[in-house]
Length: 329
Image (cartoon, rainbow, N blue to C red):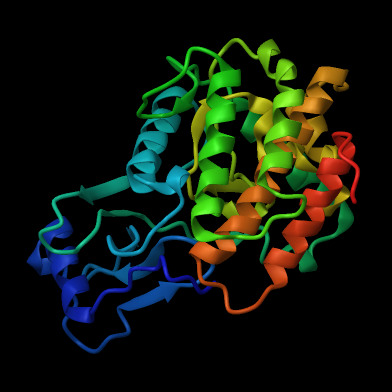
């Protein structure tokens, strides 16, 4: 996926990064087949690198400092590193090991880190080759993995590194407001307008008060961030959007209120969630609204060259506003 946030580096810079992380003896110096870009990601640039010893690793580099990112994406690499630490220390969910992280900006103009390479298939990439039974089994497994991640407690609601809020209502309303201000600043056109969206969210905010315990929320855990082998999830990737909040905000639940986000049945069964209450359905609709807003507004920040994602996300936003009682003109 192409995006202006991808901070590609020269071969010489990549060699310097490898030397700093693993020592000069691990730098390959014959040809350029030792490095290749992994192109599935939407935000950071990632490279698969072969060390001189033959070991393969992955290098992730944060966006360049002169590229404006959305407010919630600031410091995303630090968030990912903290998320990886929390997951390894508190759960058995498989994630790559971090070999080396550098935030000095001495070699590169942005943060970067090396992690172990996972030799497996991307679940989203192979979906077309799977049987319905296999798809269902993976959906249930994804639900179980997500539930385990949600067992990690947080000190407050909001970013993993803080500052946090004492209530989920305050944290979520701040997340929405930051997003709306991002869109307004860039002049992004959103269905029904910014003030209507603010009014709709405020009108349903009471449902947020049921959430009283901050929990680790991966949020971006969809099949494209799962690596699978021999029928099992062997690694979960891309943790830069994690926060402490309501587990119901996990992406796997999105389809419960909109089939456009996929069928959530197997995920919910694997997660072990009981039927949703009225307040939970309202919260999930608010979370779908937030998700659709991100997908609308980020198209400007990513400098998309076509309107496919924008048009799709605008439809989701209109649908969700309707579910929340906002009638179209």
